[in-house]
Image 1 (cartoon, rainbow, N blue to C red):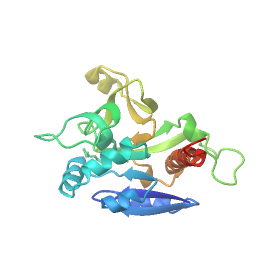
Image 2 (cartoon, protein in one colour; image 1 turned 45 degrees about the vertical axis):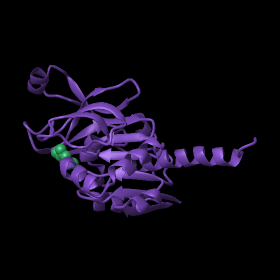
Image 3 (tube, rainbow, N blue to C red; image 1 turned 60 degrees about the horizontal axis):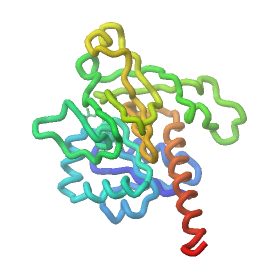
Length: 235
Ligand code: GLN
């Protein structure tokens, strides 16, 4: 069993917990303190309001703990506000900026889709790591497994991603948006080593594959670290 924490300072943390609790061999807990953080194998930073979340994390003295959790190689998945929080650079911030955890070599724009529409949903092609996942017991992918429903709520977008960052999903801009932005598409799901970040909200759909993908990243990391431990100091 793996233990996944959801940062529960603000935002859509209950929805993530509910998704995780539907997955086999996953123990899901709320994280509000550094003691709770120390007990989890992976962490989800939910959507919400990234400035508020950063303020609460700062006030509770959690920023350094969260940074060292991610820097120590523990998997972290940020959705929406969580994506902003994980980015090295962000634009569209409020006056005075906001603390970012960083770690993800990306430039993120807050409320990227805000000027056009506050919230919308669309069907996007499922990236290979997602379409390759099998719901337990199924031999073949379910119909529609090659795409997923993406829900954007005052969502950010990734404008630039460094060489270490793998783009898992992109959103094609409409001709008018493309004209205004001087680009055809923006990245909306990225992965870099043990960090996963999505601009949309899988926790608000009944598709559990993004959660499963993250749980797999956590299992992968645990297998790696236990084989290191098993090898011991002198072998
Ligand atoms: N617009 C929010 C922010 O900038 C993010 C929205 C969300 O998480 N759904 O933090």
